[in-house]
Image (cartoon, rainbow, N blue to C red; front, top):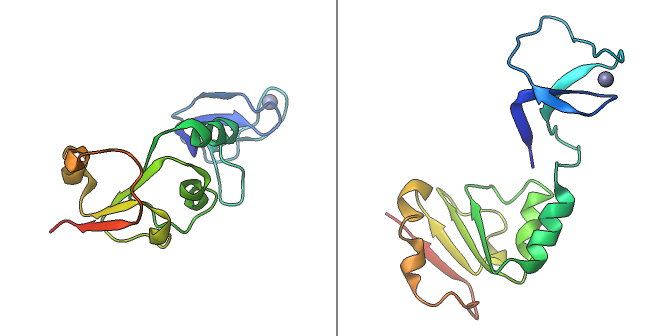
Length: 132
Ligand SMILES: [Zn+2]
């Protein structure tokens, strides 16, 4: 969705390629287009949005990890799915009310155990779990 740091692409051709070079000037493609990092800047459409939106329609479990719940379009994904939704992160996201269940704590510690909550059917109301 955000691209790949060790790839670049031509602004004109758009085809990404592996690139770990360090540049002191903006490099040019053979087509004379400017080469740029193959990442999504703010205000640009993230990569793979068609696939993301299709997946939101059919997924049954949606997990957001460590997001602020502020930056769009990702902040709205939780509201675009009928899946059972989970948030895992060190602090509550700004879109907390959109999640079925929220786990605050370190994702590396919570993820291995979080599905021990039992039934994975959608819960009728939000639940917030706080990890010490
Ligand atoms: Zn080019």
